[in-house]
Length: 352
Image (cartoon, rainbow, N blue to C red; front, side, top):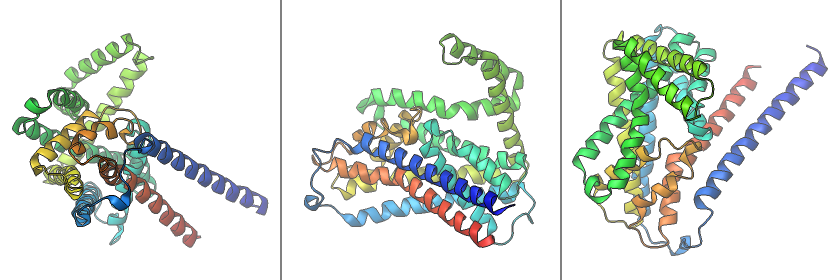
C-alpha cells in the first residue's frame, strides 16, 4: 500500500469516527431535549434535600445486574463452543463487549434493532465463533431476558393491586407483554409445532399487509420464517448443553429484578414513601407498556409513563428523580459503549 493510499485510509477512519460521534451526540441531545427540555418546574439542585446515599444501592443494582448479564453470555459462549476457543480472561472480555456494545446499539437505534446484529458480527469476527454459534448466543441471550421478564411481569400483575389502582396501565402493559412474548412464543411453536408456526406467521403478515404496515407480503413472510428458524436453531444448540438453559433463565431473572429495583431506590432517595413491591410492580408494568414504542431508548414515552412511578414526590423533585433513573436506564449504556469503543481503538493501535 502506497503512502497516499495509507493516508486516504487514515482520513476515512477519522471521517467515520467523526460521523460516529456526531450521530451519538445527536441521539443523546434529541433524547435529552425530549425528556428533560421542559424543566421549568424543577427545583434548584441546591434546594433539593435527599438521601444521596440511597443512590449507592441503585448504582450497585445496576453494576451487579451487568456483571450477571455478562457472566450469562460468558457461560453461553463457553457452553456452546469449544472450551479452547478462548484464552484465560478473553471469554469475559468478549462477553463484556458483547453485552455493553449490544446494549449501546439497542439504545441508539429505533425499536432496539441494532444490538443483536452487532453482537452476532462481533462474536463471529472478533471472538472467533462460527456464525451459527454467534447467532445462538446472541439470540438466546435476548430470548432469556424476554422469558424472564414475562415470568416476573405475570407474577406482579397477579399479586399486585394494579388491576384496582391503575387498570388502564395494566391493559397497556398486557398489550406490551404480547410484544415481549411474540418471539419466545413463536420459537417454541416452531420448535414443537413447525407447521402451525408457519400458518400463524402467514396470518399475521397478511393482516399487516392489509393495514399497509407491511409492503412486500411474501418477502416479509420469508424474513419472519427465517428469523424463527434462527431462533429454533439457537434453542436447540442451548438445549444440547446440560443445565445451560436453566442457568441462563435464572441469571436473566436476577438481571430483570435488579434493574426493576432501581426506581425504588431513586424514589426513596428523593423522599418518596412507597413499599418496595408496589414500586417494583409499577415499574415492571411501565417497562412492559413502553416496550413497543419504536424510539431509541423508548424516549418520548418512557419519561411520560414513568412519571407515574415518581408522581408521589414533592413538586420540583420529580425532574431530578426522573433524570437519575434515566441515567441508569439509558444514558449509562451510551457512556459505557463509547468508553468500550475507545478502549478497542487503543488496542487496535497497539497491535499495529
